[in-house]
Image 1 (cartoon, rainbow, N blue to C red):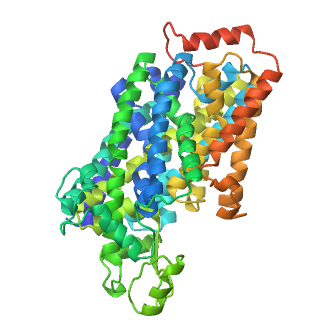
Image 2: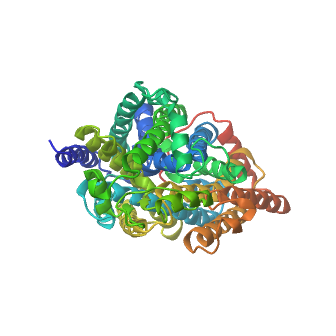
Image 3: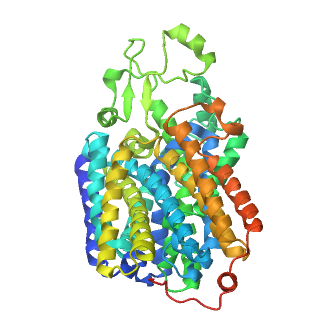
Length: 573
């Protein structure tokens, strides 16, 4: 069978499974819609959490990012993995003991303030929407290649698919759909990695193949370092980076993880606090499988890409190149009219000698980093069924996280704003309707923004993590471990953190009001959430100790969260 037939077959089967699960497990109550009835097993919840966590940024973009950035890309691996450990061990059990559906619900109750709840809702919406934009770009990339249409059309198709099963099933449908999606995405990630490792180094284990020798006896990483330096780039494994920014980006990703609403809510879908801890452990194992494989895929992909294209006649490019050109995510501009594809670092002044010797006038190849994982099996000429499997896996990763984020948006509006504030007497039927309408609006607007995002998928997602770190992290941690922090401090801290971080990101990444030379202390927009978190923490503590302590009832509630004698089901109201 041809590549296209395999892809249609593989994607069709997986989508039929997802839609079937959504219909079978459709939500009939607000508790089903928000927390899947609170009856999901730890193993299933671990798989669903892993799928929710490993978004298009993990599956599609992270390996591409590491391919092009080398050593510095490790900040994403360290930040996201370390952040999940922080969330699972430090926060999830206590939040589960508290028994509320959402982070704004926790903030509103812990800080005894409707104003705090509203600010938390705003932060949750801002964070989740930023994250959704990244996922919708990932959906567009996968659909564009799968259907051989323009990227914008791919996003539009993704909007329809996500909307259908999210609106229908709520958290109950999403949870069991994500279990299936995890199975698809991890299989799709590992199979080509095993093939590539075996072909390149003779070792079927990608993690070991990364440090292995290629057929000519050279070490794989040494070979890639040589290729990089020959093209005018610094060595792939070079650690010559801005260590300040690397630290701040890693910390933002780590601390932001602990404040991500769509991950936190997953721990409310299990019956007991013990089950929340157990499902967190399962999820960590499932996540580690992909995260330890990503660096190997990055190296294989970058080596294969350059080897396949450098100095190749454009008239003789393989079919995969033409297919990706049609999506608008890969392009070639023949600047010296020699008909050959030349990929050099045109920002490196040391390449002037190369330019003079071969008539080269600049880099002629434009590559969107987010296509690397999807294109890699085609570049390496793997079997057609493997290519189709990777497309199905990329769609599973993007759709699973998009669904979880959209649910957070819907619950923030229908539950936290309407039920808890504006219309406390709203019926359950109308609350569900409001949740579904919120999802509809969010996925359409997120899709439109995803067509022209302020960066590649992992970068946009990093912005969301920074916003979560700057707004929620201090409020959640202090809310659990300090009885003294009050509503005045939390309100002031969240406002300062989210406003500062959002303004910095908008100025430098959206409106392009300056370059790296203008960054504060050399901190990029991806890492500014750490500084925003520090501002939040300082403001929270200063204001707290200048204002009265919380009511005794609230302090006793905090003590009961930290020293639990048991926990009941998540509360609906």
